[in-house]
Length: 369
Image (cartoon, rainbow, N blue to C red; front, top):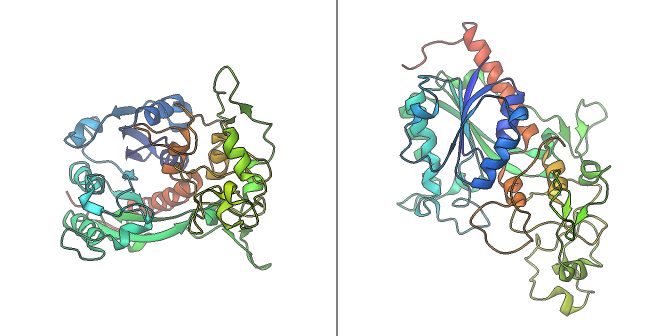
């Protein structure tokens, strides 16, 4: 079985897809305590036994994480994206989280994986380096990989094209120790409006994804249910979303009272947004929770997980916080919003496995020592 090491594991979305693609994950590393708890309670779905390093990987000896393995088949991870996000301050390397991207190269230098897989927001492609050069951060990262002997390809992929009910776009970088010409990114399995002659299926809608769930437990329950199907919507937010059509946001509803719209501006398109039953959801985020298509409440974390492509057996640990506010540790909504949709991760990992199989069969050679 091919081996892998996971960095910036989060609550395990990417890990789940990689494991489903047939890799044995030797170790994981994650800083957030609630995300670590989520990884622990899903061991049976993520493969056992696995070493979990709980802490900051900067300064960590990569070989100690991999149990002394000198080479693994795949090193993968999604470093924190806030430094490159289009909706953030885009401070790139001026934000210490931006520099964590280069930890992938540091671990690659020590573990010599046959392949690397890195997920990031699209903003990475245009992020400025310390000299102010647009795209400089990404160019520096590719240079760091090339100096280690890795050949990289990258592509922006849409989660809805691979079975997740979400219009989430992310950049994926795949690099091989041998020439990467033998690798190609997975072709979409779904489309917005497939041709009758096509083998593609139609995108999964948000309504399809959340169908069949019972009414959620409410805030008066004695404890958070194990499946996280839990409604924490405060009364004020229930009142404010009332009258907003599905697929629309509160700021655009000028017919509603100004007191209901509050201080929202027309640009606030993701705040107080209802998902549409017949369409994939917008990109799920932790800071602003989307609303149910027809009920005056937030989507629950379980409904978020359905939209993201997690199986119902997958569980999350940690608190379920309301829409706004800051938190040191990741609540359940933020864990989901920060993760890679498992169906998309699996599709990419399967293509990596195929390329590695061809390499083993003699199609390529000369792995760097």
